[in-house]
Image (cartoon, rainbow, N blue to C red; front, side, top):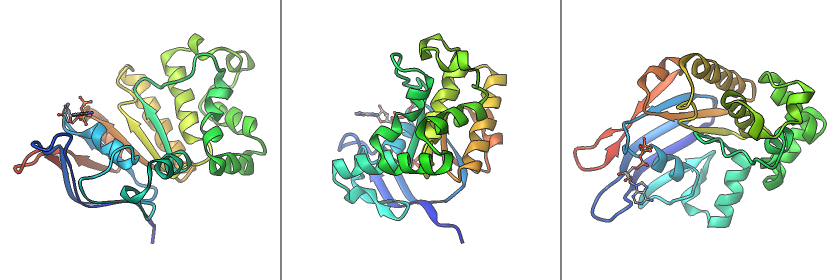
Length: 234
Ligand SMILES: Nc1ncnc2c1ncn2[C@@H]1O[C@H](COP(=O)(O)OP(=O)(O)OP(=O)(O)O)[C@@H](O)[C@H]1O
């Protein structure tokens, strides 16, 4: 039986005391699942990702990630846990313009010894890990690899961000509206690549968006919907 990647029990969270933001009675996501989380603007998608990353703590209830109750971690323990276990892709990619492609991709391994060792174990060296991940994503010309990320197209930048999220095999990939700047064709291609790579690297995928049309790419869909008692729930 596969291990649960995420287990939420009786979670509630409010940014302000007087107004509940999120309430999730129970949610379990198994390792290797690829889940689409949908909800309208303001429904708490980013709040949920922040809770899962341990950036904020629940007011009540528990969040176990890979069997660890992240609400019980100190902020430095949460930082370490995040660096080791989570790969993230945001809408803005957050690539560093003064680093080349390989340097951008290897960045998470500067903060996580676990991911550094995994990358070396799988590919021989850290640089080789980045080069091979980029090649799997179609970025393999020497000329391209030596460019500044500023000189890449949006689709290319997105693939660099994907390689950076995948390096060192984090258990959980969290993607927050990563395709909103893309046309339909590039968007579908990107989600296919993301799914394939998560499968190959045995990562669990949580993909958050308000765009209903994307759900066809995922095996499971969860919707953040208005909660009669206030806030939003799953
Ligand atoms: N730092 C914050 N302080 C106070 N309230 C916040 C904060 N961040 C979010 N909120 C509120 O919490 C609710 C959920 O916001 P959140 O950003 O999680 O929604 P979302 O579904 O990600 O929205 P969008 O699709 O527009 O990005 C909103 O009512 C928002 O105003």
